Length: 374
Image (tube, rainbow, N blue to C red; front, side, top):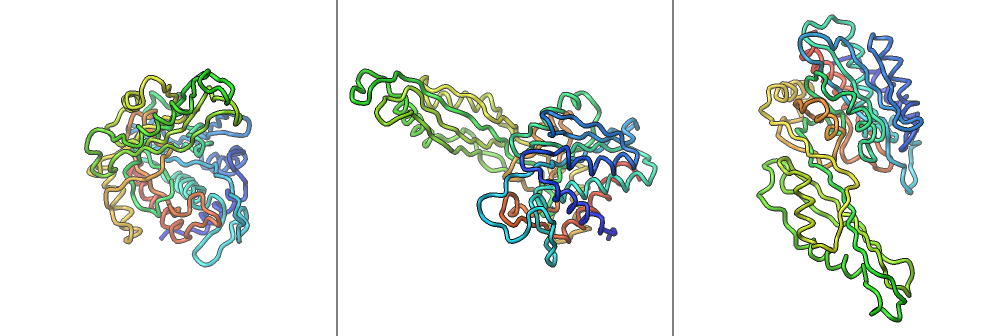
């Protein structure tokens, strides 16, 4: 097993920089310095002040397209519940390293960066590396969207995302299509509702029709069936007026093979002409066939390092930056594999297993060595 004291310490350094929906640029200065010293060309791209996505490249002009490693540096808020461990101290208790972002996903980013740095001690015979470390993933992959035009049209090998999977190899995730449904009416005094046109009633009828809606088809053999959830409802401004506007948010999780434009058309047909639909988040599903050669290679490397992580076709319940990056990179084979515990994502007293961190660094080093020909 690789000497891995570094990966724990780098994770702690990243956790110490609060990036709760902000300030990813500050965390990136830590990894940018490491990558630049190792010989990477590093570029930082802000989509808002302090919110930068980093692209680092090494030996990308070789005959084979570079492997792309990616993770995000933003985190979600701490929540209202009190923490028993300082969320920014990186406290260790046995095998657990505590702190916001340890699992989701600064631990995975630390392991990827160190694997990339260590690769530069060797001369690649086959291919180079590209790292894309993003901002604002948690709020709709905004950082990835910002740099996608810069990546589009370039050469790329496979894409590996370090989201928390407890080092299980995950072959994709469902798409996320979040929509706002709106109905309009005419306001009037609440004592004379017959003079108005109640938007709330229209939306209520539409929501009831959505409760009975089923997407056509039999679903995906691994992802299962698509899902639909009405998340919020709002109408009216005061108790004694007829509401002239009502809105609902709807969370649709799609599977490979579904087209989001068709999904919106299906929902519009189900709810009728009184409802207008606007997208909030539109991220397609991601899927790589488990029989893909590179995917099987990664599965074998992971199984060798961490025998308890069986290589079984599976998908994640959450979405990742792969929904944006994979299309921009030309739809290469894409896998998700990171040291974080999926159950710890967004949790109070979030932690990551130190053993998993150590395994992931070794896994990433071997994946990089195999692709780059080190």
